[in-house]
Length: 158
Image 1: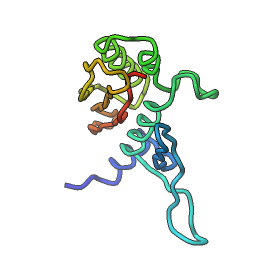
Image 2: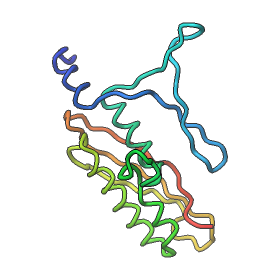
Image 3: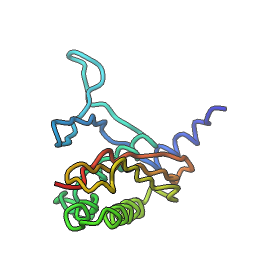
Image 4: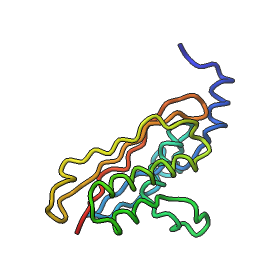
């Protein structure tokens, strides 16, 4: 069943829009670049709307250190501190989980957190530099839509 035009308009207004970004990974560095729509001389900046805009916003927040945005020092993810300060894998996991939940609670477009999944292949391994954590979150938006965002793989150790 398709959405009514009024319902779709309300959803877009509630969840907003943003310029579309593409992840660019160079080694361990993660960056983003703006996407273009169309081609040739008629190219313009691409946009994302609704749930897709919210997912992109959360993905960017999860990969930006909290306080790194000089225009919004509350924006970003403070779980990076856990990676630098904790040596016990269990404590790293829990501090990252708490940081993800705090980030989602600061986002006014998120109504309810459904799940925070921390998938770790070798998190308990004692070998430094070999531990990775894959963070995925599921949530319900204020529009009633359920969505997910993925932090990706984060190295836990030197």
